[in-house]
Image (tube, rainbow, N blue to C red):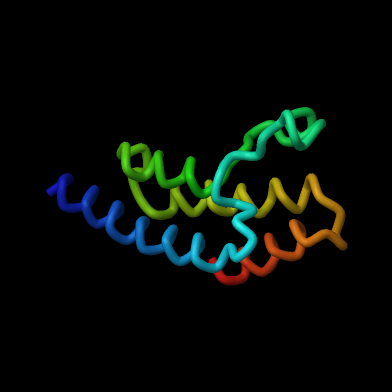
Length: 101
């Protein structure tokens, strides 16, 4: 029974992440933020998250359910909006993807 639940979570989680990657037209959220390029990011954001990390956690079975994955996906948008000013493409895209998710 548990195997079927895990497979269901992986299948549906993969579908959700694929749609988010497709909607992320600037590829802003695909990979972890590089702290060598985005200076000060890790001083402000204590729990970085991105779509690739979500996919890795999903595929390795770290999410017991989709709600756990949703919390990490929400963290992506929250981190972005916390770090970036409202008038940036990063902030605006995070808001759009948050609404889509």
